[in-house]
Length: 347
Ligand code: TRP
Image (cartoon, rainbow, N blue to C red; front, top):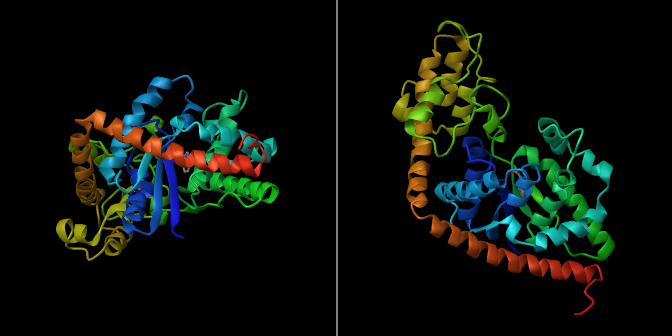
């Protein structure tokens, strides 16, 4: 049997290059590998509402943005099913049944949820919908019988939670659901791309992101003002490449042909790093190369995005078709779940 993929994103903003190396690029490769029976890509609007319930306009507007980002990066609706979470009501029903299999203390131990609670000042007044979103995420994954979930590192606790719920469901009610596993990005640099300001994570609220829709000027401005090694003051000073976002980005995005084209004095990134570390290589030169690499990476995506944005009704039509298809699959799982739970009274 071939494997099934499900993954998704919250529509709370346009997608940035952290999403790209952390998951989008991988999804496109997996999609084109032909190794998967089905690929489902979900726009998680219901999950986005768990901490944006007071801002439905933002969530709605970003569904279009995320869909455009997907298509522009090469997710192909002929090969992958793109759908909107809230339009699959079966997911809510599954969530309700799975809630019985999780305890409050288990949910409170989830490190990603904990960190997000802190960030959102939810510690004193915690919406239940937010606390339970890992259960709803288990519904997302299991509804499609997905065994493979390509995600960033911060999602590992969600996959662990899903595996526990699946095991306990199957133990109680008989073998029904598939236990998923996470697929992480290929390299450490891609696991968590730092912000342009050197902060650990790119985040819209910190204003430290490079977006897939950024213009050539915006990219250049952001790259040229990037944080580097604060102790690398004179060009001749030895510099650090490990905690230096310019080198982490080069690690994540540069290919051998970039060196041939833009920095032929170095055979590879390793040689350039060694030069920076021993001293004698200025930040300006590193940033010039990085700018060229980022321009080459983003330009085709941005151009495709602009083209697609000219026909938004076609994008929404694709989303509707994807959602209709996804609903049928989720209904099938829900029927089996209810049968296993012996609540299929009228069949
Ligand atoms: N929580 C994920 C994120 O914030 C989005 C998501 C929702 C998801 N449901 C999912 C990812 C199911 C993988 C599988 O990025």
